[in-house]
Length: 233
Ligand code: HEM
Ligand code: HEM
Image (cartoon, rainbow, N blue to C red):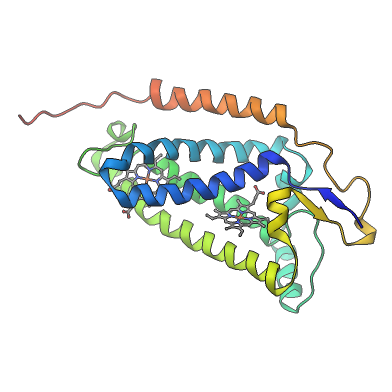
């Protein structure tokens, strides 16, 4: 039995930066207009994180790839039933149920960040694309920006409860692994040298991050329409 590197560094950074960014987005939204600049910048950063995870799901190391943890519904159901019967089926990467957190987060957090680009507080702060659409569409996207956040809270709450259940109820040490990246491979049959990942592919991750940053700069600072301002005085 040996500890092997399973979660690459970019994946772990993605996870903890995402948690931090969502907390900051909640706080800056609650603090109101004076903090909207921070809300926008952290929102763009969050959008960047989501784009990164999408690409990393295709080109990242083994356990970061969608192909490693997206299972058909039948396999997810069988896993759930066997977990509820107090069995601990072994999976080196995400288990079939846990892996669902990745597409769920990409979908809801991605939608939250995109709708934010069109949102407005009707006072001082407006997303860069607010003036690109009709006022009906704008107010619909604005209300989605409010509602989707509740879905994010529900998914994050469920995820944290599940992780604590595994960690303390089933004594499966998942939390430490999301910091160190290393997991103990307990199943003798699957404990082979190929289990771990050789490297975190850091250079590739940095290149992808630079391309995403350039894309976001173009999207927000260059391509965004210049809003027409109505002067009432
Ligand atoms: C805003 C709150 C959170 C969100 C949105 C979130 C999201 C995610 C996502 C997307 C993944 C998949 C990682 C990937 O493959 O890229 C994941 C995995 C994981 N998260 Fe979180 N997370 C949150 C909070 C937490 C907290 C507070 C903890 C620990 C106390 C935690 C522990 C873990 C662990 C251990 C895994 C790996 C699960 C496994 O081994 O299959 N997460 N989380
Ligand atoms: C994933 C990232 C984001 C999260 C989690 C988030 C979260 C939130 C939350 C919770 C609110 C308050 C909603 C309420 O009071 O019910 C809010 C409001 C707002 N957000 Fe975001 N946001 C994100 C990204 C963005 C982005 C990228 C922009 C613009 C560039 C933006 C612009 C706004 C604006 C203008 C408001 C005020 C809306 C109003 O008062 O009607 N957000 N956001």
